[in-house]
Structure formats: structure tokens, C-alpha cells
Length: 202
Length: 202
Image (cartoon, rainbow over all chains, first blue to last red; front, side, top):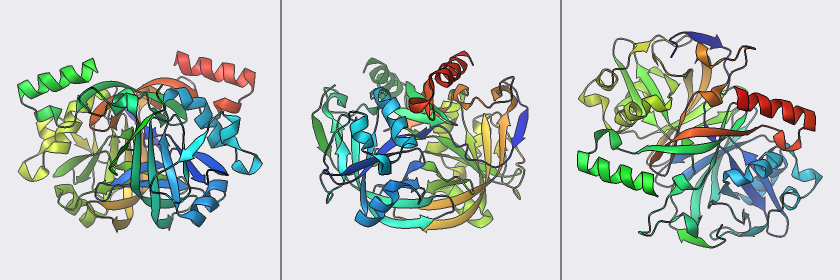
């Protein structure tokens, strides 16, 4: 490992960031937008942030309805996600072009979820903050659906096994090997051994 | 793949999220906090968000100085990052306990960067928004340093090769295999072939 550094001009280098498919509109006329400028911002209430350029077609739809769904895609959807990031809903139904279908999302008035995605978060906008190129939507998570095959026999959710996507400086990557669990650095030896065995076996 | 879903209570399930080490204080008295509730929020100006509970020791330090550094850790630092997430700087020097050292960060008045991290982003706080359990710090990236070994011979930055960390529902994961680049779904065949070969070879 080098200890030498190169200074760059200020730029958006935080990595890896999630890549999600944000669906909006209605079940009859849905749209979806790939977003990498997304994050969790609060635990109680559970809230996400999503940054969108006002020029995007989805921006107006979400401004109007005040709701959207954050769909977490697996690597199998990587190309469809990229397509929904570079093309505009103004020019046609991107979801249909990718062979994706939608379904109603509980807790929302109309914004649908994208079928087949490992997890879907129904979100209601609470604040919109203009920052410059992007506006920041702060939204409360009001409903959550997770695909049945992602639960272990004991009911625990194994999201690290969903083959989710992340994004580093223009490159889509798989979320890969599990390294440890929250608190592993200070866990008692017996807890550490049991939990790490669980992580590796599931 | 199952098409059946389980409904969960609303919770913070967006995944994977980045795991960063946020350093603050001064070079003489530094502190660092592991943060998974972080994201990019704007491209121009380049901005990040970091959510922190007001009870955390770093919260007061950042509130007072208005600055911090977002350090992107590689998998080799995973245990140190976890330690800096579960322990408090009130009880001692966490960085020293992990064998980590700091160095001055350009563009900031005092908040230092953590040595050895693949990338360091110097950040100045622009807004603080209370949301509930967490307060959201919106900060402009004013300086960026990247380790020399992460640049290819042609000068391009290969951050997907930095072995960065992400976090999914309580589990630390490696950012793994590169799947494609932004725009790959609509790239011309010759561009696609060239760029994918570059991705795989670097």
C-alpha cells in the first residue's frame, strides 16, 4: 500500500454508493429512474434521501405525487438499471423496454413497485431541499417488502445474500463477500465464532 | 427467483450503503466515527450528506468546527471501522487504539484525514437538518485526496479496485466484481467491447 496521495479537484467521490431504481407515477403510467445519489438519513423515523436533477422526467412526477418507491436491484438487473439511468421516460416506457412490470405498493396512493426486485421501500416525501445541480428529497419509509427467498429458516433477513448493486466512480459493482457484522470488533469470542459461522453458512 | 414478498414494518433497509470513517477535531486531538448513513447529494457543487445522532461525541466536534473528512476505508480497515462505530471518543483515543494516524487535510482549518485510507474527502458543513434520531449534515466537498496506487498508467482513477467497504442490514461487505460502466446498456458495440476489456484488465 502506498502512503502517497494525489490531490484532485473537488468531486463526488464517495464510494461505493447504492444504485436503486426509483419508481413513481401510477400503476397505469409508471416511470422509473436509476439513482446513485441515495442514502439512509434517519433511523427513527426511518428515512431515505434521493437526489434528482429537476430536468429529469421523474422529478415532476415525484414533486406532484409526493411519493415514490425505492427498489433495490440485484446484479441480474444491472443493465436494466443502467438503461433507466441514461434514457428518459419522456421518450417512452423504459420499464416495458426492459421487460419490467410494476405492482401496487402498500402505504402509497399510487406509486408502484418494480416486480422481482429483492426489496421495495415505499416512501413519502417530507422535505425537498435545492442544493445546486440536484434537489434533495427527504422521505419517510412507510412500507417495506422483501422477497421471500431472502429470509433464512429462522426468519432472519439475509440482505447480504441478495446480490445487490453498488456504484464506484462510474462503475457498477456487486456487493460481495461478507466480512463481519456490526459490533464484531468488540464481540465476545463465543458470540464472534457463532455469528461469523452463521454469516459464512447462509 | 421467488415473486412472493413479505411485508415488514417500515425500517432503514436501503442497501448496500457506504461505510465511511468520518474524522474530525484537530490533528492534535482527533476523533473518528464510523458512518453508514452517508451519501452523495449533489454533483455541482459536489456535496455529501452524513447523518449523526446528537448523542455522539463527534456531533459536538463537527457542530463546533463546521468541518470533517470523509475517509473511504478498504476492507483491510473493516475491523477498525467497526470499532470506531461501537466505541465513543469520550472514553479514549479510538484512532490510536486501532493503530491509525492522522494527517492535515488541505482546504480545512483543522479536521485531519486518516492515513492509509484509499480516498479522503475534505468537507465543509453548509446545512444541518434535524430529522428525528439523527441530524443530517449537508456538506460541500472542498478537497479530495486519492492514494497514488489507485491510478492506472493512463491517469484514470480505478476506485472499483480499492476494495472498498459497504454495509447491508448489519453486515459489512466488500464492494466486489465490476459488472459494467455508466451507459453500458446503450453503448456502441466497439465502445462496449473496449471499455469492458479495460474494466476486466485493470
